[in-house]
Length: 241
Ligand SMILES: [Zn+2]
Image (cartoon, rainbow, N blue to C red; front, side):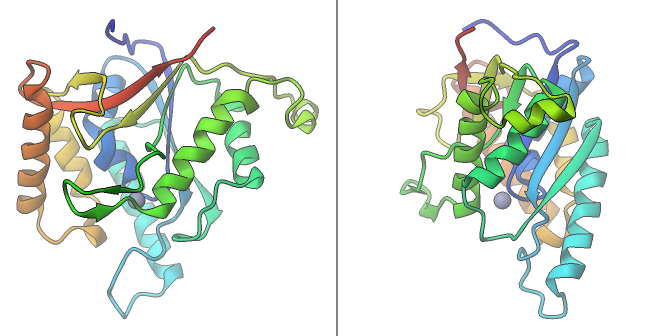
């Protein structure tokens, strides 16, 4: 599969929680913005449940996590960050969520959309369950990209606010297992920037040192599959014109 030329591209990266994009493919985001892409973040929740600190209520935590995400996005060169108003842990791929996603796709007309892989319920290799919100956002984004954003007759009310159908060209979903991936991006030059961005998510990280090690192990393993020092791995769908 030929490489992606990020120059001049508009990329919409859609996650369930603040930090999802950065963990999943932050080094690729840094590489894309460096190459001249315009990257927009859209997060469906404010991550208001992502803490076991009993002194933090969901309102306070969402404010903290929004700030952390904005800081991390700046490190990666992301142009703007938007949050939807869904509850962390309760995301479902319903028509309301899909309509909001279609609105963003029609407004910003991205050539490339990044999101989570909704097909994985669990990873027996690592012994973890794929968070329901990650599955939900992935499913909703896939449906929003195709067929909803493309079809003239879906959400006809969008026309009144000046939005037209839009065809996304490519969809990329980060892959935790190299055997799932069909595309590897060389992130040797921007891996350190990813770690810098991730360390902005202070409420989510116990040890930056351990995090760096974990991320490095994965980036090296993925890189090994493609002949790069560090790589991020993806399932890449090139959608028909
Ligand atoms: Zn998440």
